[in-house]
Image (cartoon, rainbow, N blue to C red):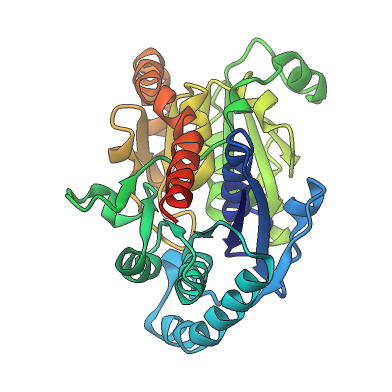
Length: 349
C-alpha cells in the first residue's frame, strides 16, 4: 500500500517534519510513503534523509498569519493547483492522500476528492479547517482553534502533533562533548529556541535574560532569520549553537526550555518531560494558547517579564516536570494514532 503526502511549505521546517514523522509511523504499518512539495520548495529536510519528492503547485496564504489579501490570492490559485494534484494522484495511484497543513492540506484533499481517492487532512490553520472539514476526515492539531471546541463530528480527530518517538532517546554525554569550554556543568541550563529558524524576539529574550546576570548557561539554537539577530547573542553567558541536528541529545542536558507558542518543539519538550516557558508573540504575533493545551506544564511570558517568569519556573521545576509527564505518553503516541487513522481510510476505500 502507498500513501501520498502533500506538504505545504519549503520542505525545511515543521510541516516537513510532520510529514516525515507520519511516514515513519506508516512504515511500521507496511505503508510506503511518497511526498509532494511545491515547485519552488528546496526540500532540504527530505533531501537530507535521502528522499525524493514530486513537484506540484501548493499555494500558501501565510498560515496563521494569513490576511484577507493573501487568502484571496491563494484561493485564486487553489483550483488550478488541485487539478495539478489530481493529475499526480492519477499518475502514481496511491491508496490514500494525506494533505499536510494549510495549502498542502487543501490542495491534497481537493485533488483526492476529484480522483475519488480516500484522504486525510492534517490541519492547523483557519483556512485548512474551513475547507478540509467539509470534504474529508481531518486530524486537528493543537494550534487550530477547533482543538478547543467540543464536537460530536466523528470525522474530526483531535491529536497532538506527530513527533518522532525517538526524540526522547538522546545522549547527554554527546551533547556535553559538543559544548564549548564556557559551558559550566555546575550551572542550570536554559534553552532558547524558535525552531530551525531563530526569530528576533527569541534572540531578544535570550539577551534580556542574560543581562540580568542569571546564574545559568543560556543556549540558543536556530539559523537567524536575519543575520543582524546575532548581535543579541554576544552576552557572556549566552552560548549560540546555530542550526543543529542533534536536538534529542541537547534535551538531555537542558533544565528549562524557552520556546514559541506553536509547533513541534513544544511537543518534543513535553515528551522529554521538560519544563517550558512560551515566549509570546515570537512568530508574527501569533497566539495558540498551548499553555491551555498542556495545562500546568507550560508558563507564558512576555519579553518584558522573562526574568520573573524564569525565576518562577525554577522555583517550580518539579511541579512543571510532573505535569509534563501527564501528557508525555499521549504525545509520544500521536504519530501512530494518525497512522492508524490513515490505515482506516484505506480500508474504507
